[in-house]
Length: 270
Image 1 (cartoon, rainbow, N blue to C red):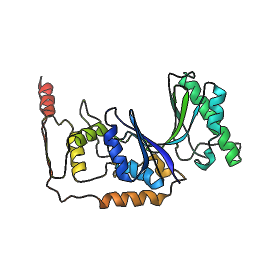
Image 2: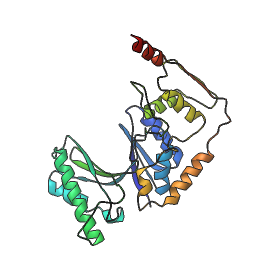
Image 3: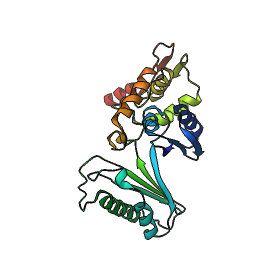
């Protein structure tokens, strides 16, 4: 099945992300301010989460429609076949945002969307009870100039959380932004990188992962791994492809320096 997917990103890094998405084999790639929209099947969903370096997350666009009233919002959300996406015991918190829209109260919109999903699931699963004790399905709704976008989050935690870091410095750079800088700096497998203000080493780590072609999402899990409509083997296959693509036999070198530890010890003495 083909899905319409959206990957938000930092403003100014859209071209980098677009190139990444095209490399995955996605189709109908479109670039807009702060996001890249594309189409793909379950394998593209898994591959995007595992491989994209500069995306903040990957969401499925379920429907877009115009709504100026709560009735229109309710009807639009109810028309989505939620029962085909979620089991009857699914947990489905709703996170919303509104900008330049008639429906400006985000809490009120979230309540309407939640209610609409409940009614749709009850009807689709022929039940009166939704225990919400099962797997987590994060729903996102965004209103922009009265246009409603209803989305299902496939990533869970933001994609900047790679899984390789336990601690960070006082002013860490986000991993996705560091990856974009690395790409724009044209880091290659034979590059020599030096960071005199390395901090916790994010730029160096992202540079090394790019040089060795190590997928940034290999060490973490994603929300959609528990989604009933995406087979488990899809994730296994895409992780296997990502591992096989790693090339450790490269001359890449990285050097980092920082005085943070020195300054911390000096402060303790004072």
